[in-house]
Amino acid sequence: MTSEREKMLAGEPYLAMDPELVAARARAQSLCARLNALPLGDASRAGVQRELFGAGGGAAIVTSPFFCDYGTQIELGEGAYFNFNCVVLDVCRVRIGARTLIGPAVQVYTPLHPLDAVERRGTEYGAPVDIGEDVWIGGGAIVLPGVTIGDRAVIGAGSVVTRDVPADVFAAGNPCRVIRSLVPSPSGGGRRKFR
Image (tube, rainbow, N blue to C red):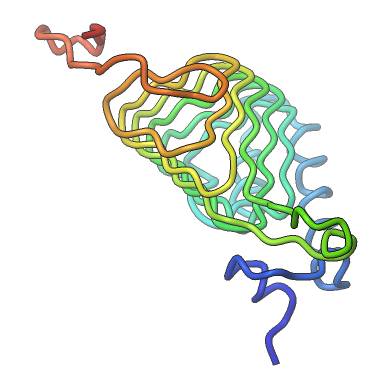
């Protein structure tokens, strides 16, 4: 028999109030509270992050406060950075690449709810989010379920990302759309020019 957790991770309809899932959310809430109570730079933060996140937590920088549903579905690349007040609802996998910068108050969502009110009373489902390497997501942006953001993309502050964003572009707006391509600076100094 398939558990509600297995259904959740597979993106199938599941019962969010299942006791196993309630306990897992309580665990994440406790770990987030511990993390948020520690000052940035405290050596014990890395251990709490490793316990909270599914992969790579010890090599990421997470500025408090930070909140998530489970933590175990969040995979962080080396040097990934969360600024203040970020929320990740990780009922499905959230993969964030190395050196990706997540601005303040960014929200990443994987849960979805049925449009039919009767179905919505007890069930939800989800879709994974993949954010590439060297991405910069500006403050207050919202990334919706099922979205992939390509490597080196820049998402403007306040954007609502409803569709996939390719690599090497600047995208912004509500809904977020590609504004222009990005090309590396000829000097290689890390600065990018808009094209």
